[in-house]
Length: 607
Image (cartoon, rainbow, N blue to C red; front, side):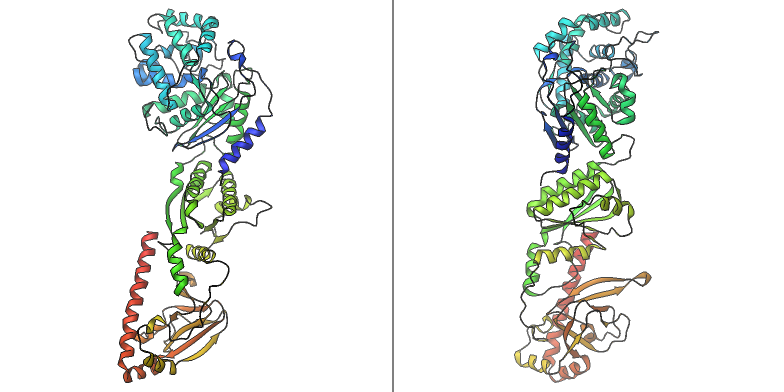
């Protein structure tokens, strides 16, 4: 199954590839040579999984996307107070190359405009500008998760034509924002902008910020956690220059653009996005990049001010039908087959509010387990709700898994409109809809039936009570005496063969054909099914141990034919042949021990 996330990105790429507005940056001659049709999208999750389409591995230069990462490096090296004395954090509302300085101190208004970025390049650790460059390159490489190199042609082009930036650097020197030689610092700035990255690198850099400063794959801490929120705050308010307000309002994710055509967007605690397309608008932002991020945010409700938890928390636990089989108790070959294959039925317990990143995690876990799975039961008992976008992805995954022969069913959805409504809206016209069960027992029994197949398993004609586990080990001669006192009765579908609380009528039932459910009363006049029994099985045997009243209701799920023993007649028989009672009591003890073991497994699985 291809991930619905991958399919979605492919459709997004196809849609925005038709957008031809904008041109590559021309004020740096080398950037003007970029292929305007280059276009890649990449999304990286907090555990390092990357989904990418298009030119996600095409190299281009980082440009202004380097700014938040170098700013974070300066914070880590010099501390907040020192950096704040040199560079402010107020939005300028101006273009990226504007000369926006505090009129009292001469400090740049924020680190995302060129003036602020040149200043922060001078603030990273290093006794010389060469040492500072090594620190900048190492830091940016840690964010990307691999060593980054400089595009020398772009660097020379920027250095040769960067007259405005040279004026800014000298102005910063005039106000004592830069110590030492300003032109050497400026060359470091040109080099950091000329570092070669791919769209995939951008997504990993964004995901590192989303992950609290730790790279999702390498597990290397690229930035102390206390500085991550400061970097993201400045990205949110200043990262898109004079488009920052509109971006935050419409897209709602901390972001940074670069005139090389890249954009990064960060959804803290969830994932990072990288987009590459050299076609720029008049503000220096990628036209396709803005379009992709806007649509992505709208489709999946990704605005940073939407509440969401960690995606991994969406799946609280996974266990199988080997841990918690259905409460029916098949006999013979059916039981053995289910015991061997129960692990192929998997329960996935979902938790909290399921958004797009949470459903991505759940879908990925299902795909990881697909080779050894026949059915998935999505237990929704601990779910608070699901977004419509997440429901659409989950429905897409359900249909894709069905094509692979894996069923996905829901459990415990009843009376939950916050779940039922989005899931119902996600059903396509060509889809017969999803299956939902009142409880896990009904869901797992359906999955067991599917595992057994549509064709009924062949059962030999049941000769009961002979063949019943209650009389296992009894000699043929004694068994004939038991059969001689048994009689047969047929119960129609829907009949209550026994009722909870009724006085014991002294009958023991051995099922020859059909199926019954064992129901115990619960509060509110409802019943809970505790077992389903079929041919070769028995019920009512506790009267043989002196039980005075029935503890459960026995409901005929189909027409049922039973062989019946009257306890009084049976008791008289055992007086004549005590060995019958000895064998019966031994087998009853084994049966009760097996039921206790199964109940213990259920409790352990559900605890």
